[in-house]
Amino acid sequence: MIQLSAILGVASVALGMVLTPGPNMMYLVSRTVSQGRRAGFISLTGVAAGFAVYLTAATVGITAIFAVVPALYLALKLAGAAYLLYLAWKTLRPGGLSAFAPEAMPADPTRRLFTMGFVTNLLNPKIAIMYMALIPQFVVPARGSVWSQSLALGAVQIVIAITVDGLIVLSAGAIATFLGGRPLWLRAQRYVTGSILGAMAALVITDRARPVPA
Image (tube, rainbow, N blue to C red; front, side, top):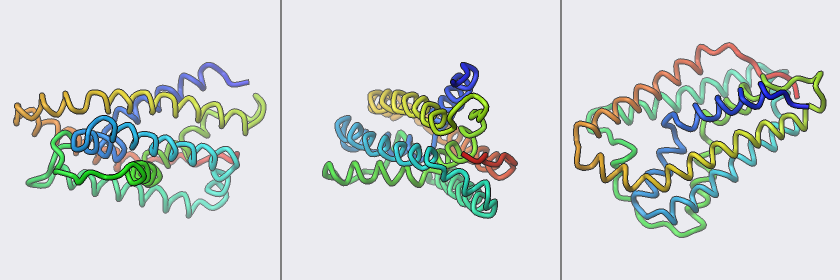
């Protein structure tokens, strides 16, 4: 049986992750502002499918591979950190754009919207680190099936992430309009986002946590 403290722990981590600007948020906002809420929600279904893939992998024991072969886990962390640094540079560089002031994007069909949301989430280093390193820390083998605990805790993360991302899709247009008329606010938002992405990269690099076998 899962402890309440484990559920609350995963919930807090998941909330902090989804509220921190990253690839998923940037894509959903850009797509929603460029093509409308319908496109944003279709993209969100792709993101949800990506979460399902991570949950399945973690549940069947992919995490154990990283525990046994630390070099693979290290490679994942470094690749994720490099991607976050790249996003930070794109945001902070002269002429960089805020997620709420995206460049014009061509209208994509439903299948591509879903696929891009799916791929964006699969390549999101924040989600990889969460499932391979963070959620396993809340699994206690002595309290029952590791498989069922992983599944339940992953479900908690997915519900929180999809709920918050859905609210972001609903409000993206309004936020973009608000910031669009306030260039100083838009610039401040860009600097804050870039700084957070850079700080996240530093935390990923310096984090010494290792996944536990499933």
